[in-house]
Length: 444
Image (cartoon, rainbow, N blue to C red; front, side):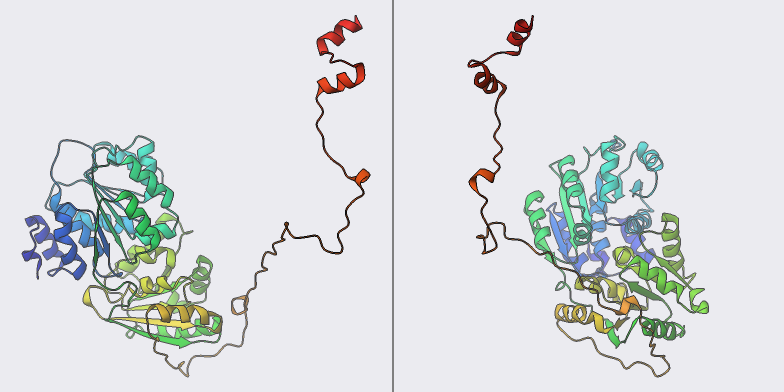
């Protein structure tokens, strides 16, 4: 099937042709007709299978011009990077149409975004928190919203957007179409869908959490952190073998440290991104990587969902994620749009349990690769190579029967707090209750 077989407007077919996309993916093909019918949709598909176009094509096809300045379509995403990328995709798709799209995200002042929506907007692409701020501060009216799209919903729940999403659902018109897309289907997602959606059709394009077939996976068993650094520098030195690389780490501190320890020549061709970098630094890093100004980008899991860049040849997992699902999202950054991708994972002895969970999730063992002889095995041990232990909270059973060491106090020594009223004190002292007013008269 091609996009010519799907009833989409002429301007969308022309835009897709210019982008170089000619055939719909499985999730796009399956969800299009259902979404066009007006039913609520829950789409479950792996990272890298074209979920963005799966909801953009039907909602843009159903868009109709109105004189109302209120937006008709709201698209919610978990990160500012993903907001910007979806916004830019819409701009490309609607180049031949008079559709006004506005993006909202946090980390910047609200006033410029308020000015952008002041003259009206057809489509709002936003993070949940900033959309709620814009509505509650009167910068945007939700009354005209006909379609609500939620992308990367499992990631939103993981980041704690539950309450904000609930408030947004309550503020939007009850009569609307909901389209939800996610890589996984959890109990939390099912509960929210049951509460706010109207008989949605669940569309599953591929088994959840199954790595794409076009991604080769390899794993190096590495002794410690500094040996990982040596291996990383060795692999990245070969520009031809690894032309465009995403290096994933689990924490922002690790991102800083790994970038700092890259060889100078490699570091000159790399940048890094995490949540504590400024907005301009994050956007500059993503733009530079997308525009091939440098070939290596070090990123944390927080922005793993927000990176949708074509042509990533390799993903390197410098360390293993705590959540095994993140492994799927990480390697899904390569092998996109039917292209062959490569995943390389480093695993230290301390990460053995994480590795077991990942291999149970993907229902198979990641092929092991011998450490190259040229890589120096470091004997330097750091805090990153030593297991940490947490003391368990010792709960005391307060209802336990007293043991032999327990001695009941003598009756006369037991304190009992008894509250006596002023009236009772006066009765005991004078034989009858005396009011404060009466005492004043007596003194006179």
